[in-house]
Amino acid sequence: MPKKKDAYAEAGVNIDAGNRFVELIKPMVKATSRPEVLADIGGFGGLFSLRNNKYKNPVLVSSTDGVGTKLKIAFMMDKHDTVGIDLVAMCVNDVIVQGAEPLFFLDYFATGKLDPEKAAQVIKGIADGCKEAGCALIGGETAEMPTFYKDGEYDIAGFAVGAVDQDNLIEGSRVNVGNKVIGIASSGLHSNGYSLVRKVCFEKHRLKIDDHIPELGKTIGEELLTPTRIYVKSILHIVREFNVNGMAHITGGGFTENIPRVVPKSCKVRIKTGSWETPPIFGFLKEQGKLSDEEMLRTFNNGIGMIMMVRQELVEDVMIRLNGLKEKAWIIGDIVERKEGEESIEYV
Image (cartoon, rainbow, N blue to C red; front, side):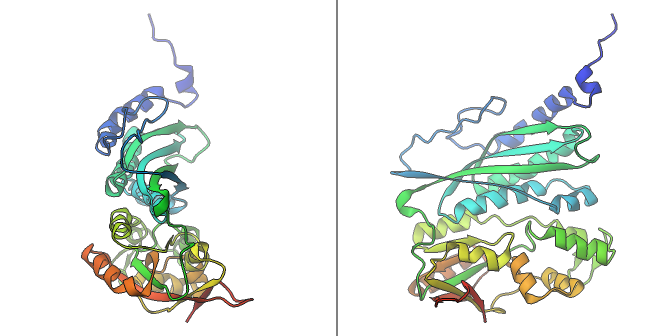
């Protein structure tokens, strides 16, 4: 008897490919597991137990994000095993700035036609990011939507949940005049500003993805696909040893938009430009795009991916600890009194 045609497959959705994808990623997901995980992937919801003695008065901290148009670089290079790291980083770095330990992660992967091997490479990056952050990948969603995406393209989103004791929550209210601002190095652009980056590099200057850029020491594609730093383990060490008054993850909006989010209205952040090492990619983009200092500081991280605000008497010890954790860090500013009518951030 001839095999009956699969109407759904003819419409562009291949359930068999989806099943193969799940089998490919099971070992990757299992490698991220924590003792609190109660079920393997495949159920309708991920299960994670909070029944332990770790938290007296736990507060859940959640974050969701994507990778944005950095994905276009992955498509251009046909390299898909690092954007998942970016996805995890964008979420867990937002969780950790409030003092919370990331516990688990879920992902959403959407494409026009599912390529199980390519999709598995994306999940490999997500699993690698979860292992680096110490959180479990407990579930996700794969959506195959014919004609909705261009051939070979996809989108990803992520969701992280962490926990912290309420007494240890860091939300900026303790930031005060006299605090010092510590900046921790980024790995480059991270995952922000790529619409402008692509316009400068590929529309205005017609660069090819494999063009070698001498000042970068690598191809433009290799530079632009460098994964976002995950700061979780280092920050957890610091907040367990020291009283940190405020932290900011420098993402879209750069210094100008992100740092004031965690500073009381009575305070102003004074940043000393030139007080840290700026990776060459930022100078390259500034020159090639003829971008102003203001645009750079409001769009990119400029070499600083994480900001910490601590009391002056703790600064030296915190810096020594960060160096011991192999983090490059600099004292890049301080907190001063904000007078009526002044902006919340000042560059000197």
